[in-house]
Length: 133
Image (cartoon, rainbow, N blue to C red; front, top):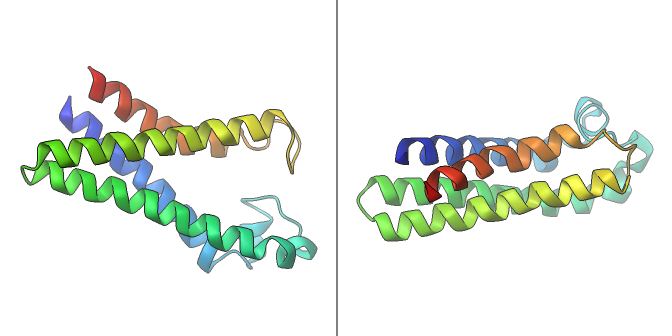
């Protein structure tokens, strides 16, 4: 079961780190802000600071999951397991927040944010369930 935890924690980390690149480094590209985040080009200056800050939160979460798996696999099970579970819980709850935002139609039509919510919360949830089992 440990391998399942690590796999889905690292998958979640990869998604969060990818989103960091989109939000911090590539956000001004139309394919990113329009195609991924559904932000019109005219609104990019208004949300640029938000995207930059949230991007770094995503990097920190993804890095925390990677560090936890490394610590756990290196024999520091208590530290690594605690870090993986804590970070996966934060990532899962971030997915729940995105789901609530989608249901409330905050910033886009209902249903447009489901993919992001599932990507943010799905892999960490699987890791958490596997950790409990």
